Image (cartoon, rainbow, N blue to C red; front, side, top):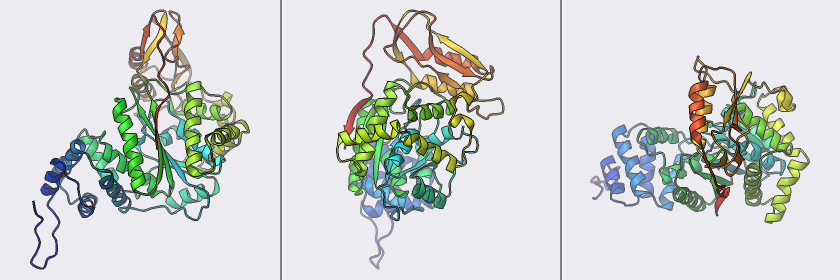
Length: 444
């Protein structure tokens, strides 16, 4: 279909129907067409029914790397950007598709900053399975989840890390597209995920990006091949945009770490940086941390990157950096430095194993839903200090009646409903299963 032109040879914008038809038939958009699409969505000129059709066409017919890169660049240009060139240290962001019990973004922000890497951390609701990283940090009294762009810049300059809510002025068209993706069941669209991630991460001044693509029942990506494809798509498009990017595909078929819950996860992050932590957390943090340092250029080899990550944990500098970041954002609580002062919930109940056997499967999503129900109060607000702890992992042998996890709660109102989710999350078997590897694939 030819684009009509005026007698003066000035091209008219192609109709939305033409653009929908073009993508429906599997053709690539030109740069001008991508620009027209982004501008029309930003200015609310494209009717919702046609935007829905366009998003659905992209979902089914995909977009090439060049197309997606142009889309991401145009999304960046729709809003404000943060210029960090006045900071001489390397700038590397970390993105996760989100998983149950995943507190690695908190930990890695501190590790990166302690190693001389600036780690800009603006998070959006689409970056976590149930709770965003700034939601978790809001459990610290006084912690400011919203920072102005100037305060965000100042904190990155002085401390090296900041974690806050995504600023609406950064890539504002993305929020409109995400809302439509949610309404049309096209959230898993690989090119739209990629454009969303890269536009927001590179708009805040990041030179490079380390991506944790999670797959499994505790992630919105349930298919491992789709997760691998997303990792390849993000890294490929980032290269087209002239940015460095590494992605790890990681397992999320059981909760990460020892607990799930807002404040409990912050506590676990602090404990990790004091030298604690479960084996799965240690492995994932180490591997992601090494990628951050190597991408930033502050470590020349895998060995030196590993040693640097281990050093800032052992000498306490990463722990101090996390406290520095929290305090800079107004957070203050005695339990940050003394775990014994954490406001532990009034009641504890175990989830007993119904029989003897091995933990064969855990539906992490069911546990996340149970914690969400448990923490919801009558007034609609959240109790930030409840959750589950001492989670038995896949492959663990248990006796009948032995706790599969411990439930920490204050209000019994939603306990029974939450318990139903916790019970249905576990499957036991007579033989020990082989736990899946934490890191499935590395894409660079």
